[in-house]
Length: 112
Image (cartoon, rainbow, N blue to C red; front, side, top):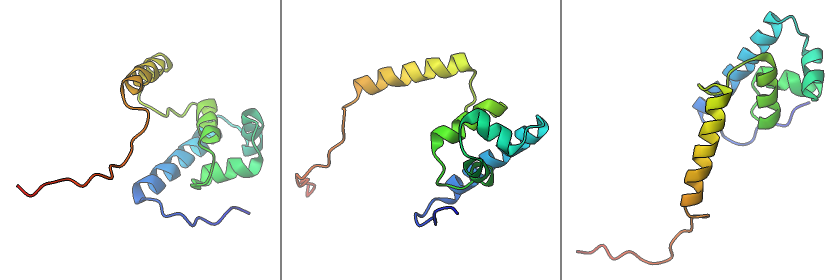
């Protein structure tokens, strides 16, 4: 039994998760793997495997990414080397940005 989805998600997000789930299922079937065998390789339950393939929004992103990686579904348009370089580049950029964003309580004087 899965949790009820009480959080509203955008149509784009729902479609993307559903597409990823179907791509994972297709790759699993094309490789001749059962859902149980793939779940075992990913160290997750068969139920979670089925929810991932159905495109349910509440699945842990780490589990979804691991399953996609096992069956060879690309997550980003980059090779593993390029992906590592992008991670490093993003980490560098994040170090240059403020650690947090705070809302300002100051009233803006815009009555020119």
